[in-house]
Length: 292
Image 1 (tube, rainbow, N blue to C red):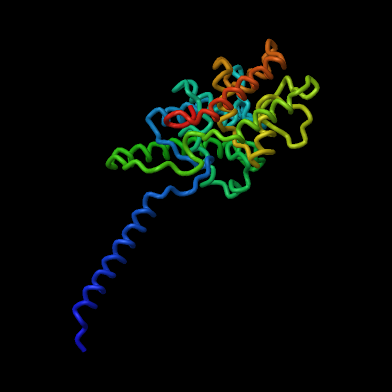
Image 2 (cartoon, rainbow, N blue to C red):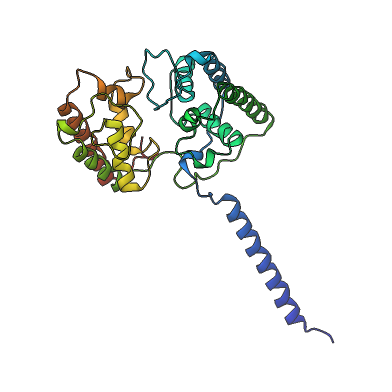
């Protein structure tokens, strides 16, 4: 049977429309950012990150230097070091710019995921692997060795790839986003630290769920967990507090909190300043490029 010419044209038009729709869906799928967990971000690596891995191995080169009870509090005069603190010290020495989610720190976390079957159960991969009774000093050295190899391999791969086409940042990754929840967190921190009886003057980053006294860092951990359901040491509010504290403290919130010259009134004033600043910024709208 001969198909009428008009029907042929309609069929051809429908086929083209379907093809165009399929193509559009495919293109959208390519550029749509995947959901992202901030703890799994993977910053670009540099040659300095290789040096950080090497230096961390030197910092923690004997069992006598190993801190088996890490709290992620890294005092300047320490003579023993955990995995986390060895990497922090190495980063400060190599680049002078330690970041909790820096490239070397993140790659070390991914190494632990690769070598430890318990990693999925850790709340803090570096700290919990370091403190795990089944982790040996040889295991710690293995992390540093694999970290150096992993970063070097990424550098080699990056050098052979053409420049990547920019893609939209995934939701929840990259620059932290200012929301009203961040202001509520600061308010809650002020409530948690509203009397000297609640203030821990010798704090660290080991925050216990049943604690009755709090340092500045652990007050943020408690407030963030209550409001957001989790805490990973980052966020607009806590980063804003860090930015106002003198960089002379290796761990700024802990160092400032524990400084004998700092009073509870000083901490409350700092928190009020951050709360007011974030409230104004939220009312005015974010600056170009997001919250700084």
